[in-house]
Each structure stands twice: as structure tokens, then as C-alpha cells.
Length: 146
Image 1: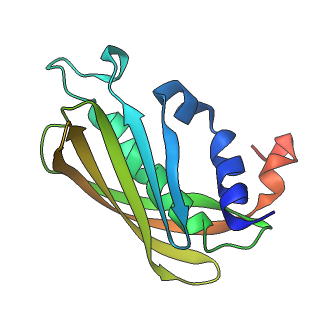
Image 2: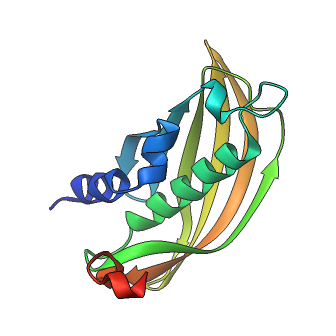
């Protein structure tokens, strides 16, 4: 299976991404882009995207960027995550761009930027740094490890 197909197959197994209406729009070595449309169910009390949605997209963008540098036997697991929320996330959708900053065999250091998109206007709403472990993919096959 080629890189893009492997990354997309892993993304498609994430139920929470389906719940958010998120889609993986771009995949290349060391980077991915994820988009999620606005819906009232993803908002906080002021009508903006909830910070948890922003953080989830940043975490996933970092993790799937890390996956692009892993072997077929490995899967990403976030072990550390820090996010700065820079502006209210208001718009038609959020776009999270993840990229690998440094890739070791077992540990990947990644960055994600999240933009809100309204028409032609892009606003940087969050920046995150994440440490992603390359885990053996046995978790998918052995439910006793979950």
C-alpha cells in the first residue's frame, strides 16, 4: 500500500474525525492538511469553534504528519502536546496543517497550525507542538491492549 493510501486508511478508522465532519484533504511526506466544517454542534457559547475542536484537529494533523514518516508496522500515538490559541476560531471551516519538524525512528517532533477560513480570509487561530511516538500497530488487532 502506498503512503497516501496507508495514511488515509488510518484516518478513516478514526470515529471522532467522522463525528467532527473532518476530512484529510492533503497528504505528502512529512505533512498533512485536515479540514472540518463549522456546525453549531462544534461551537462554544459565543458561536466560535470550541477550543477542543481546534486542539483535536491540531493533534491529529501533527499525528498524521508523523505517520507519513513511519514504517507500515508503526502507528502514531501522541505523548505530549502543547497548543497556543491565538484568536477566536470563527469561519466556514477550520484547516489544520501538520508537519514533521524532526523525525527519529521512535519519536517524531511535529508542529500544527490551525487556520479559520471564511471565504478568502484565512486567520491563524492556533499553533501546536506535539511529540508523537511511533508505536507498533498491534493495538489495531488486539483489543486487550486498548
